[in-house]
Length: 504
Length: 114
Image (cartoon, rainbow over all chains, first blue to last red; front, side):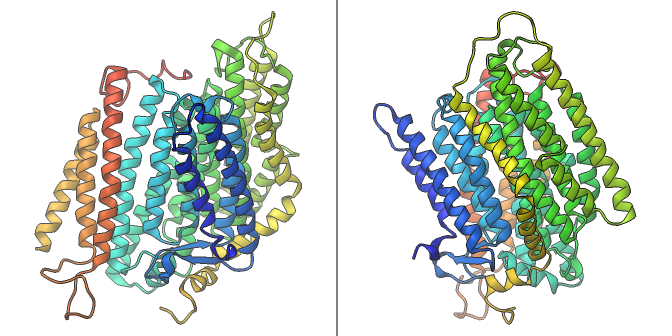
């Protein structure tokens, strides 16, 4: 009974939790809300694990209201979706734990917004319908608008205004592209679209290509690709640490959407619309990588440095994805796990560092010693090594897979120097930041702000997850290779959704 | 009818893009509202424009496609909520920063501060 509804559980859990959290809970509501939130995140991890196991052999399809695709809306959990859901759950648990030490009191309804945000993200990963994807994008966006403002402050306000206005325009473009695709094909189910787009010819194919490129623009805005990344550094650097850490998964929603739509609908076998936009992704991805590296080196604030590290990871992933081979997609997936977890860990860590340093906050200048100097220093050291991509942590393995994925001369000639060059610049920037903050401190007594040991545990958990995906790199790599195979051969997905090859 | 419809959508979109590219929050919010009108009209037309027909298959020779109408309804509801939020946000920005300029006059000073 329960296993039959497993696919929708990751959506129901955060939604019901959020609704419960909104109830008036009497004298000290925050205690119950926190307990509910942590319970929800724990259940999510369990559910996502089961989902990953049961969707390993073939995609699970859940037809809402038993309306079969392509007429009804379906949720589809294949390897790619389930892995992303598990990643979201694994990220949400420590981030929420960290927030429960008082940061959720900075504004009202943080806990409920957090769950709604999870609902939107997980929904975007699980849906098999393009319009439903739009709806879940809006769910995650509207909670992200509110979360970005969490804690208040003038600088946050302006960053939020930019973010909101850009995304509202993005949503309009999303709807236009959906209209174009529906007008040509008469369907919005992704599997059905894949079949119908492949048969288009002439003018209709050109219009469908235009619609597809509009979709690419929307997803690139979410993912923060080169001309559309300007909102990201400001928004991520201004908001609180927990929100920024949760948003580590937000750019990945855009990347997931690009991988899903552009392998399934505009993949190799899509006739006149085959491999749409891949050449754009290649050049813009390389540009994003370069811009991110320059941004990292030029930032004078550790938060901004990490925001630009997000930009670099986006550039890397989309460039590698555009090479369109099983090897490249599996490299992207491994790197995605690594980069999401490590970015979140760094955002949380910088939040702690900034508070303990007092006035100098996260600016990369000489400051006071921190109260928990040694513990924070060790964590920063581990996190920095992992994100730079030096052995022995997962960053190294991720970059190795990425470099290996480049096969032809032209790919090697452009990708290798940019990836290795940006790695070098990141190393310079982070060693500069680390030595200024941890070694060149003022003599005298350290700052008096301390964090409870319990608040450092979530950061430790994220770092442990990094070590985990390093140790089990082989197992994970085999799994993502299967995901990549499925992505390159979407026939199984289409068959699972539409129920057999004879349905056209 | 198609030509008139297309011109209307095009005009609305063009005006909204002009307004969105302005530097102050009020015209931008108006522009985004107009863009959502244009988008809704456009979505509505994706089921092809037919007059005086029922949205039921099999009753008559031709029918009007009900799905775009459902999509438009969803888009209107979401767009309404988003517009309300952006208006409140714009008012907050005007109140707290004392200006409705979307970009600060010089943003370099503020870099690195929360």
